Image (tube, rainbow, N blue to C red; front, side):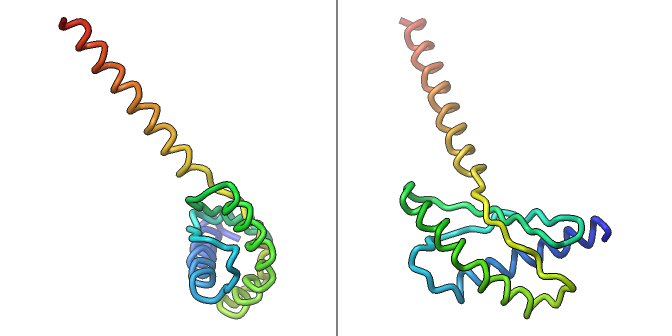
Length: 124
């Protein structure tokens, strides 16, 4: 299957899973989840679904359990909506890029503040 088609199907899967989680999965363990991206294998049989979640470690664990338990339901709805030859196996993975971005921003802020403090000391 061509790379463009794989990317297009991955985009559709990302959009549909977002809608399914928002509107149809009624698992209280699943928090406010954002589907960051979908990495679809070339044969469209495996979809790694990267999600992000802002919350505590407990909320993250609960969400991972809830997503794991909802995989079959989500896959069944994808099969109905997308009409693919094969509905991909879904593997949920935590996307840590937002968390990493916040960490980097905090580190940069510390460096910036330290630079201002050093400038004030030199000025005195």
